[in-house]
Image 1 (tube, one colour):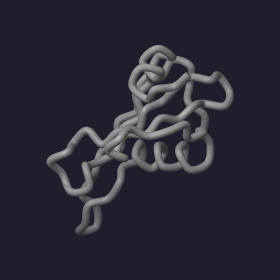
Image 2 (image 1 turned 60 degrees about the vertical axis):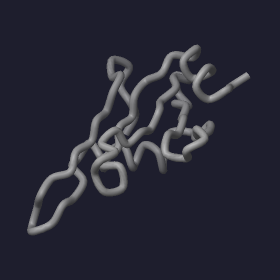
Image 3 (image 1 turned 90 degrees about the horizontal axis):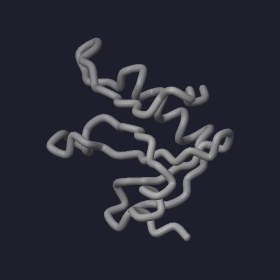
Length: 93
């Protein structure tokens, strides 16, 4: 369930299955990562964007919902942020 060292972005999608919209395997993986593996560090003022840290390699990951026109912001996306990007956006010390 870890994030591989060569991964920099995980972009989920919604798929139509059995008559309804559901999360694809990437969205399900993101959900598992943020609930069972990554450590939540903070969130932005909107509350939509959240910053996580990988406990193994200390890389920062930002959870966003880039399809804002979709219900609930659409499917999730986890994207690697450099330490400087994380410090600037999330006001880390």
